[in-house]
Image 1: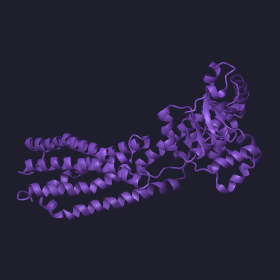
Image 2 (image 1 turned 135 degrees about the vertical axis):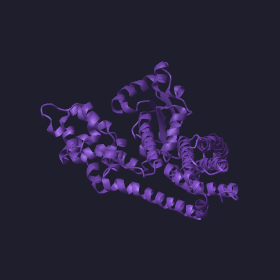
Image 3 (image 1 turned 90 degrees about the vertical axis):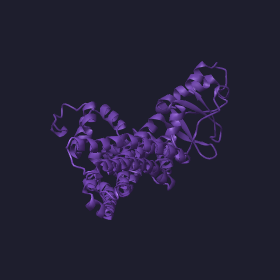
Image 4 (image 1 turned 120 degrees about the vertical axis):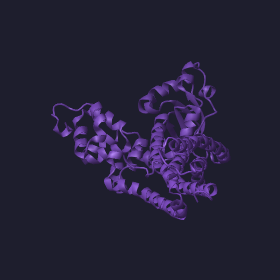
Length: 444
């Protein structure tokens, strides 16, 4: 039963709305949100994506919006505003208190995927000359407002330069008469305010941190990025990469919320490029038209040859794209990857070639097919072609992400369908070139 059909005296539970939210249409979403009790609605509102928060606010009456937008931390408000049309944003900013407006304006000055755009501008700061007892008393007072970001206390000087960091544990185990400067750690992992979110994610993974301070070039502290924030970034980045690897532009909204014209537009571009690429396959086949006419048996194995190359190329490009995203390899590692993938391609080709050759030889022996009296040479042609095409596909698939990264493009754009199309054309050239060398004087 849809939400608007439910009894008004029986509000939907938080879990029921969470489970069904992606499948609701607009009217059902409004009804479901209004059906929840206020505490559950607040929990839901704080938990959903910024795009959904923006949708909810825009669906509410203007007089209802203030209480909801003020539930959000400044960094979450900044994310929400990014999801609202630019011409509508001033009306929503006006609903905030003056302090939050300043914080949000500072966050919006950074790119959305930079550390400065992800950070919480509110964090716990203490002076180095405080006693441990005074610091603990202060932290108790600050906990209510900054509970969500109370992982560490940051020690700053009068000009907000970051001097060190102290954990709550460090403070509680220290003697009350010690000073903060005596228990703080001065070797602090920091992020520049312009650091890209992918590099920031690697920083969290490398050092296993709950929060990272964000500083400007003069090491003045601007805010913190928490593990929760970077977890959402990693999910978003992974989703975009998967969509691009699948041969489509990344969707800006969830699948079921993406308008049909936009869905078609984001998929049509890549399909058109791939279609044009496949036209070169037809051109390659026309180049070897005489060979195909002279030995029609060769045409039987074209799908086998080009698919093996496309599959190996898709495997390689997927592995390399992910390795680049995780920082496991960098541009300077390209030669090591070439050697590794070249060897992999040869070995994989040598594993597949006997399977293809056995198929031809066994079918001929047991009269399941007729591959002419020169079936041994045909099987040799197919086997060597598989080795060549798989090796080339693996090499091309692994190098294309490096080329795109070198051109400052997203490596994920080296989609598996694109690599397969590229290898289709070159695979035909390899196949028929080897056929000409091996079968000339017999079938050709």
